[in-house]
Length: 212
Ligand SMILES: CC(C)(COP(=O)(O)OP(=O)(O)OC[C@H]1O[C@@H](n2cnc3c(N)ncnc32)[C@H](O)[C@@H]1OP(=O)(O)O)[C@@H](O)C(=O)NCCC(=O)NCCS
Image 1 (cartoon, rainbow, N blue to C red):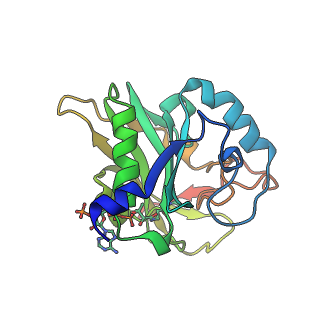
Image 2 (cartoon, helix red, strand yellow; image 1 turned 90 degrees about the horizontal axis):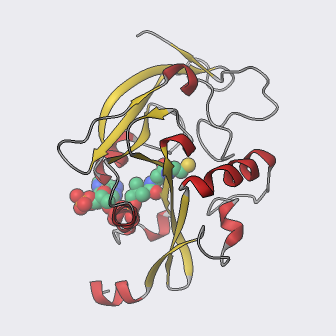
């Protein structure tokens, strides 16, 4: 398919600014849909602070999503001046190879022109297929810092690394830092996230730091 034809069949819509596809604010592209308290509270608190979720629709089908927010409204405890945090990006496997990931990223950058840079996390040696470091690097992020951890209840023997990833929009942008202690608590805002902290797990931290 030519690039022109592909572009005419592709659109990216911000679902925080339209009622259409509203249920996708609460759910991921795949998997079960469950509207749950922590997510509802998260959206209530963050949409007015600059949280955005966008869907990429190709030929009428939703095949990609990106979600981002300023540091104070993000999933991860990233600290920085005028830094936007990409909570999540996902393009369905069946839609790979059409630069949809790049398009979602470029759309975010274009929408947030005054931002010093974009940060996210990446994982290495985690058992899930998510947030792979090489994929985040392919999108243009560079590692700034790393922490080695184990999960307290799953694959307990498997040490994996969490990276703070960074993509500045100018050379002068000050790189962000992160609160590593808070990172060990995981995230409660997306049940599909590899660092999801289940509501039923009562300990404060789902991860323990290891020194390798
Ligand atoms: C990362 C991701 C968004 C990329 O989307 P995509 O539409 O497949 O990728 P694109 O076509 O935009 O390609 C982006 C870059 O990666 C490269 N790339 C993509 N797949 C690749 C592969 N399998 N091997 C090598 N390079 C690859 C492309 O060549 C391109 O690089 P370039 O700009 O230098 O040419 C997608 O693979 C994805 O959703 N992965 C899972 C992300 C994730 O873990 N989300 C969290 C869910 S909880």
